[in-house]
Length: 310
Image 1: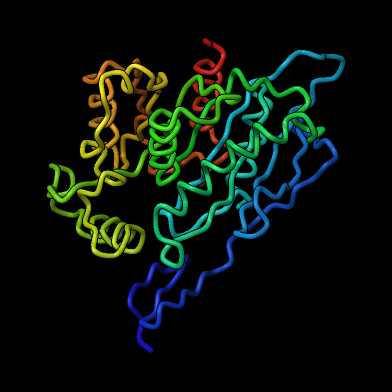
Image 2: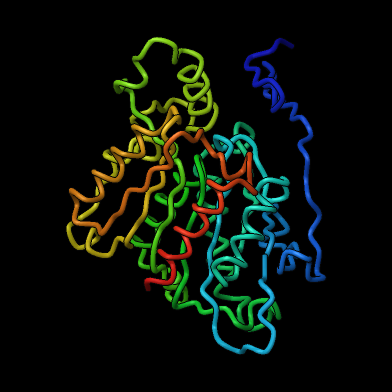
């Protein structure tokens, strides 16, 4: 058995298909309100697959109003990551407070053991679960399903796009009204290299993203599969008219910045209401790596403003 791919500190893939993942710092859920103004608990979306999620509920004493819902998909190149990671837990708990919203953060199955579209299917199923559980899950009793937003970073941003496409094309999950999309440093690609990917000094980043796609896409597919290259997806004009408003967040020092800028321009070309927001001087998924930084607080504020404009 030989080593096929090595992502130091994260995971290794071996020739027999087995995967070794390294432990990351995690945070337990707490059903008691924290000093930060929120509580959290883990729920099962589907026990047979398995798919789970973590709900973050802000403290809103003495109020009975409905709260918007943010459904969040973590990053990790489809191959790793978890809502239990400390960075995601802190970021999303604080965001629930800052935005006064309920957050449902989804743990989907990983590639290469579960290649795409498994992650998309798992995340889509969280919307079905949400629509079914809102009447029986006490933590969702104040959830306003007419104000649901999809968000995610890196591969999670890609999932946001592809789950939104599915809801549009199937016209499904009627009880859940997706009001907007918030994509953070989205992970897209293509067979054609763009300027940033051809630049000297980017060989390591390029090799990393190529490997993530190779491990995630269906066997025999390349980076022009429409799950990776959004331009390859076929939508009618009527379907584009149903595409939710979107905001795309990019980071100035991120290898994926140019892809995010191109994605925002693509949406605009197709008539989608879209806004592009750049965090100058920041790196890829800085909000997860530094969840209490000033830049992260600004991102949370910007996301809150987008949500409450609806």
